[in-house]
Image 1 (cartoon, rainbow, N blue to C red):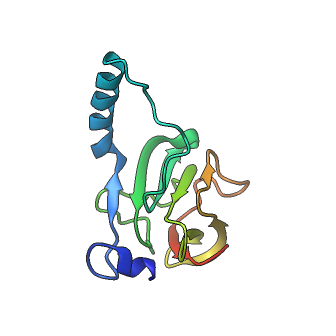
Image 2 (spheres, one colour):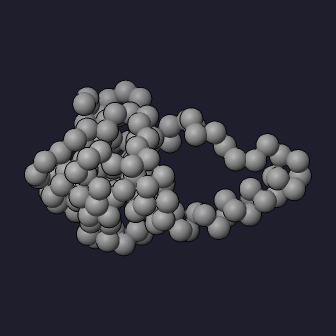
Length: 143
């Protein structure tokens, strides 16, 4: 089954989540866990949840955005705002199997130079020449 059929909604609908909405609850939950003698922060090797994530700064810092599907134009993200040419770190949390890798492109509409982000990859900084250069992405079968 391809990614379009695994989304909740129409095939061309892209689900995006803003990190800003979710961080407030995470902070409260973390504080409660620590005060109750909990373990604290989750490990970096978390289970896949089907999302491709990007951040505006190295090391997953600053504003971020997450997609379950493809995005042909980073300029128009309802939840995340304009992320065109702002990506400095990323993580592929796609489900293993078909359409598990992500091809990122320097231009909108999947055009221009591109590189592939393998399933499970976390890039705390972008490869040479790719910082603040990504404008679109799509899920692919293999790098």
